[in-house]
Amino acid sequence: MDCDNQKLYRLSTYEIFVKYAGQSLKGTIISSAILYFSIPVLSRFYEASSFGTMQTIQNFSSILMVIATMRLDLAVLQAPRSELPKLFVAGTLISIVVASLVGCLIAVLSQAHSSFYHGLGHSVWLLPIYILVVGVTQIATNMAIREENLKLIALAKVAQSVTFPSAALLLGLLWPLTLPLVVADLIGRSSLLLTLLRNKLHLLREPLSIPWLTTKTILSQYRRFLYITTPGSVISATCSNSIILLITARYGASAAGLYVLIDRLIGMPSMILSSAMSQAYTAILADGQYNNREKSELIRKIVLRNILIITLPFAVLFTFNTEFVSLVAGPKWINAAHYLRCLIGMYFITFLTLPFNTTLYVRNLLKYQSIIDVSQFAILTLFWGWVFYSSAPIEHALIGISLIISASAITQATLSYRVTSRAT
Image (cartoon, rainbow, N blue to C red; front, top):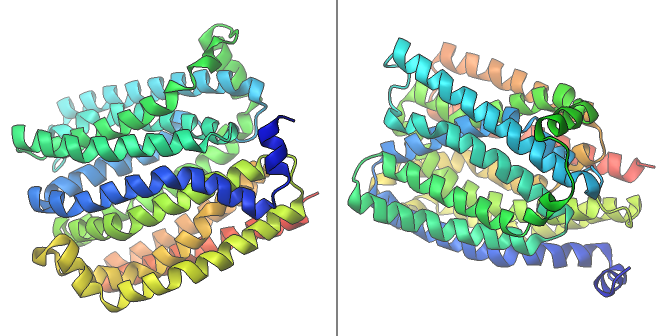
């Protein structure tokens, strides 16, 4: 055990979590602040349709990313470190294949049905690149977590947060169309990936067999992720990313734009902060030197202390929602305050529970995770059927979405705590 590990071993599990989370949060807070304060500028610089197009492309890429990686990004959290180079090569090659197939499909559909991507314009041609970048980024991020190199993740987030708004403003001045915002987002994500890969290329120096043979071997070795985890993950990703598409279909592009704004103002910073905690927690969970009692106690402490920290800010947002939206986004977005009231509970619950969303994967309880994913998908499908059938107002739809996602998050967090405390 080296000197740094000896020092960590003498700390309590929660102190180690705070240390890891602090490493990630140093960059996370900076990146969150940059992205957050760029929203008022970009919201006045771009129309709502530009944000809607960017969000739609992101949603499609998030769903297809699950297929592009075959969930080998989750296998990274379990695999021996000697397997990491093979997992990286296999995941990258699969992402290239899937991205290429999507590109071919877009080309075929554009020839057969020229209006199939109506509303997205030329942005749809960037979808294959999105898939490749997002897929490889997810694998590289989990590799950094396994290496407990959370400082690198923080640095990568800062690079993305600086690159995206800078590119958006520059391209918007030179190219005043919808496409620049999508291109700027892709540039930001690429800077994130390049930063993550900068210190990981040494993994590829280890001897590897022929890449395609390596990929075949890896898929066989980790086939449970392909057969069990991937279908459930596709369903879960579809649930979370289809919301904006369904809102657009039922209530129109303006309603979707208001939803995107609230998600950027509240959901994005909440997601960034809780993801930093998730990376710290996962690093401890995957480390064999901590016992199950310590890990379950860590979950309890994280939840209780986060409740004390975030309850007042969320209460203030709920109470002064109109003033907040008007101040940050401008008077023309004032209707988004109604959305904030409906969704604030969901953001509160997901902030508390997201840090533990990798527990069932790391514990190799893939069937339980699949059950949760499929159940959420089934309930959301029935709910959206009711929304379309009954012509429910947007407020009812948002409250229903908030309740379903919150219930699913609480179920997963509770199960994560139980399996951690009872694991042998």
